[in-house]
Amino acid sequence: MTGFWTAPRIWEGETVFVLASGPSVNDLDLSLLAGRRVIAVKSSWLTYPAADVLFFADGRWWQDPALRPKAFEGLIVSSAKEISDPRVKLVHKIEPGDLSEKPDTVALRRTSTTGAINLAVHFGASRIVLLGVDAKVAEGGARHAHGRPWPWPLKAGCFDEQAAEYRQIAPSAARLGVEIVNANPDSAIDVWPRRPFSECL
Image 1: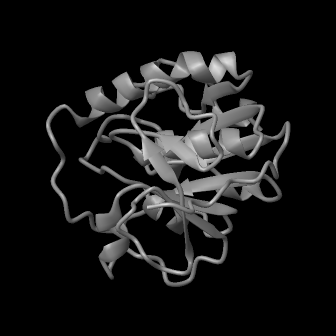
Image 2: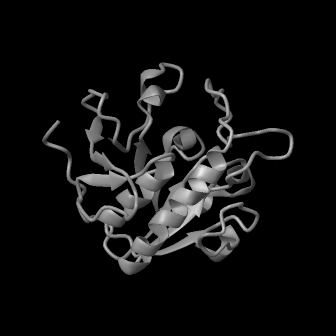
């Protein structure tokens, strides 16, 4: 496929919040994100419908009518090449290593959050704050904050694969001058500094 969408540098030098779906999001006051730049990952837009951007890499998610958003008003971006929908801006996907520096391309393998991080870099972010990057199941067994039923089973080792992916991209983010902070002190991801949400605003 050719003619991928090119991400514009609309948030030059700004802080961008990447909202993943870990259960820790339910403990946050997301109203504090009002007026800030937010990229929601997949069904995480349900926990913050005012997000500027929705990013997904898993085409199954969009193709499932029970999961695909009907009311999201922001920009929708995907690296799932099988998607053909006028609402969705398609970007090319490559394997990490490094984050992509091409504005029509994102690097990711196992988690859409990596692609959302790369998209924030393309938009010009100087600082990225991760929300809901827990990399573990909550006490009581909850996998997601948004409460939407998830039709696919939890794969053994998936959190380890996500952690490895974050470790891969971290040096390139630092080289590009982008600070990344994980706003969950209890996250299993220790690649970036872990700080309370209140300190990241």
